[in-house]
Image 1 (cartoon, rainbow, N blue to C red):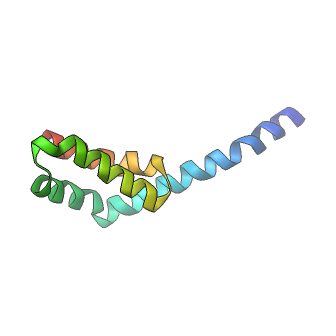
Image 2: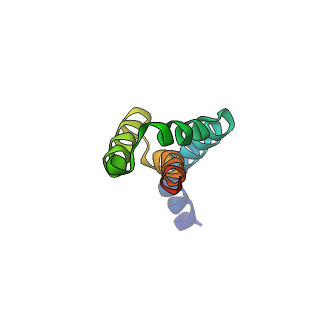
Length: 85
């Protein structure tokens, strides 16, 4: 029982981070931010500069929000749509 409680205590900070990233993704998806990123990405980023634009966009968003998980799950999805377009 003590081992289980100790394991849960060690897991709680990681769970909080993942929960926060999930809330951010849900808010951005509900607000249309991901669709906006795809639309603007198709207009702004040319195929020749896609990789450079992807690195800069993910770096800025990750630094601004403080979560790489949220960046991957929002901007990463948007960049997949831009790459497909």
